[in-house]
Amino acid sequence: MTNMKALKLILTGIAICTTLLSCGQDKMKKNINKPLNMNNIKTDTATFGQGCFWCAEAIFTSLEGVLKVTSGFSGGHVANPSYKDVCTGTTGHAEVIQVIYDPTKISYDLLLKAFWSSHDPTTLNRQGADVGTQYRSVIFYHDGHQKELAEKYKKDLDDSKIFSTPVVTEITAFTKFYPAEDYHQDYYANNKEASYCQFVIHPKLEKFKKIFADKMKK
Image (cartoon, rainbow, N blue to C red):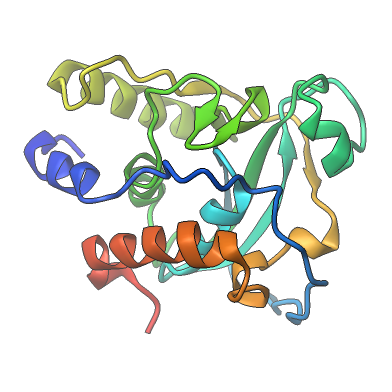
C-alpha cells in the first residue's frame, strides 16, 4: 500500500462514470440469485459507499475471496429506509455495499485498493451523474484495524498528490446497515441488457478486471 507509484497506475487506469445516465433510471428485475452457503467459513465484513451501489456491487463481487456483496444503506438517522426515502437525500444514508469476505483469501488492504481504484474520491457527494449525499464516498469501518488502514491509505493518497484535489472520502464508524430492496441485489448480473449496465457498469467493470486481473474470480 505504500507503493504510491504503482497505485497511481491503478487509479489512472479506472475510468470514472461521467455518463448522463444515473443509477435510478433503469427498469429493475427481481433478484433471481440463490443465497450463498457460508457455513464453516470464517468471514469478515467491510462496508463501502462509492456512488451508485449497482456499480460497486458488480466490481467487488468479481474479486476472489469475496463471498457475498449486499447493496444497501448506512450512515443515516432514519430506521429501515426505503430506496425512495434515501433518494430524497434527507435520511442521511449513503448507498453502500456490505462485503462479506474470506480474510484468508483477500485482505482488507486489497479491498481498500479496489475501493479507491473504482471511483473518484475527490468529488463531494457526487459520482458522475449521480448527485446527492447518498452518493458520497465513504468507508464505514468495523474495528480499529480497519480505521487505521483506511486513514493511512487516505493520507498516503493525499501526500502523494495522485489527485489534483484532496480526497474527500468520509471515514466513520459503522453503526447499522439496511439492505436495499430485493430488486437492487445482483443488479448487474440480473439486468445486463439495461442501459445503465451496458453503458456505465460494464465498461467500468472491464477496466477494473484488467487492472486487477490476478485478483479476479476464475
